[in-house]
Length: 205
Length: 205
Length: 205
Image (cartoon, rainbow over all chains, first blue to last red; front, side):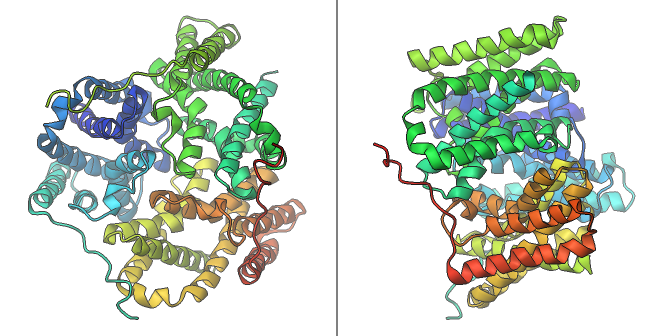
């Protein structure tokens, strides 16, 4: 069940990565690499940082097959997918909620304190997208003005670690924590919520 | 013997990295860093992912001295090297074949399944070049339209892991697997073979 | 005492990272991420490469709180900080000296040879800044023409590992090694010392 959800999240993230490759006019290698990096990059980074090597993302071949399949799917059917942008965005919110919670809980299992565990939940959820953006030479979306993305992920991760600290087990705190992230992200898309900007640079001059 | 080949591959990759730094008008630090990153980046990434730390690329000083020497060589003699572009491209194909096979076999030794082991062979061969391109703010060459580079590396890695699964030892499967990658890459250069592009985005609109 | 110095260095690096985010017109997430990456990226890379996982930068929450606090500070007070560019540059030189030495000594403690240990000292000192520059789509400062930055860091790291090889303990060799890096960097700023460039590309044509 959890594996199925995980693979679904990976598939959705990989679709988003592959579509970026198509937009950037990369070739089939570019589509497959971007799909894989987007889907697995965050989890691999978390696993390397907590010492969970070789990471399941490599040790279990299904984690690699899934983004490759999604990449091929994008390669052949991307014109149809472009018209599904809205559903894909919602599915992406689902992946975001799943990954931030799963990442935070795994880091917590490896003995990390709540704050670092929550940060690694965030890294799990957004790390792959950051790598994808760097590879196609864009400033990562999460750093720029836009509908909230990192904030809901961090919120979900925080709920997960706080719940764990309070003695709840993963099955009890995982689903509500993921829902917090998913709902927050969807509301942000709908209502155009954005993170605050720093004040103007010349304010004091 | 294997070490000599390895260091030769590192030297050639480092030459290519240093020449990029010269083209980008970086200073001596940039030349040395790009030479080192290009030559060692892929192998270090593989080692970190499979848990082979500290990686030989760091633990054995010869792996560090080689790209630094190549970088200095480029710094002083790059005008001559620019005229050797064709031989360097062929030598680079040799490095590619060597690294993809060595990377896949090492990952396999560490217990990874065939598919992830082949992927890590690819990462070993192309990872350093990707990092170099990111550092000088280019979309990595392997993602863009151009003569096949990742495909031959992946092919060599696949031959290596399939042979290993079939019970062949490294000495038996390594050389033919490397030859597959090298010949494929050289043919791609000669005949201008490229990877397919996704169809046009507006095909269905 | 050492922890205090370390956190001070992290704070100063994080200020520099946050200010880059403001200049690039990123939002509050961008400011916090860039502050954290700049401050912790080099040390985390070193720790992953030598197998010191989970790294103290994650395991000890103070290492995460410090750059987040610095990022918030930048977010609210950056107009004042822009006018403090010179003092911040000096403080940054202090962080550079501290990090290159601490990084080299830690790598040495983990059994690495002098050359790789010195290189990891350099990575500790400049790695976070390189990641920050890549994230905002700039060619990393240390690779480009400018006042010496990597050279003083490498010099400090070399002094530290040579001293360690000569039998001095960390408390004896650490401070003078850091002073070498700091003074060299400050002189480079004052006198405009730069690293040499490769000769012109058309020299021989």
